[in-house]
Every structure is written in C-alpha cells, then in structure tokens.
Length: 131
Image (cartoon, rainbow, N blue to C red):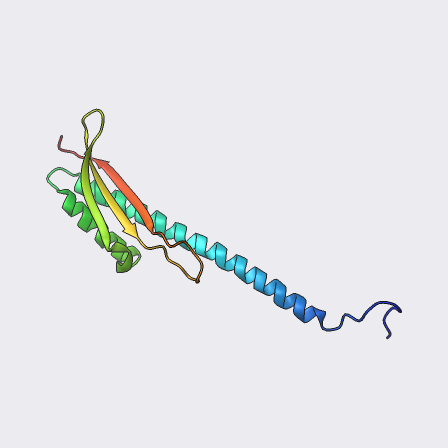
C-alpha cells in the first residue's frame, strides 16, 4: 500500500519516539525513587533520634546512653554509614525544663550522579524525667 501523495515517509520514527520517551520516563522514575528513598531515610533517622532522646531522658539514664541507643537503632534499621555522627546535648526551655537533644548528621543516599551535596540534619528531643 502506498502512502498519501505529498507526505514524507515516517518509517523508523517509532524507534526514535520510543527511545526519547523511554529516556524521559526513566529520568522521572529515578527522580521519584530518589525522593522516596531520601524521605524514608530522613523519617527513619528522625524516629531513631527521638527514641534515643527518650531513652537518654529517662530517670537514671544519661544523654550518652541516648546517643548510643540512637547509633544502635540507626545501624539496625539503615546502615552503620548513617550512624557515624550522633551527638547529644542538654537544653533548657524558657520554663526551666531540662530537655535532652539527640542530633544525627548523615549523608543523603544518592542513587545517581545528580543530587544535593549537603547531608541530613535531624534532631530528637525529650523532656528529662529528673528535673
């Protein structure tokens, strides 16, 4: 069967269309996957820091024990790579209540060459039981 007179042949353009569309969809999929992975790691770190702060704020416990608990939780749930920089401090609110603060600084998990070069900084806080 012959094409319509006056129109150029478009044979082979399906391969080019498929390639260009696939590359664009792959890029969008990787970006969404990267965002999901980063949010998962961030939320897990927030949860571990909050649990460590609660552990360190118990009666008879120290903030250093809270930091160790946070390191253990991060290592078990994610990887020891994310548990490298865990610090604790104590703060006092305006009402004079002592608060245990656990801070975690971790790298952002990157699956491709593009992405932010800054890390994740999360904190967990808990009121100290002994006032």
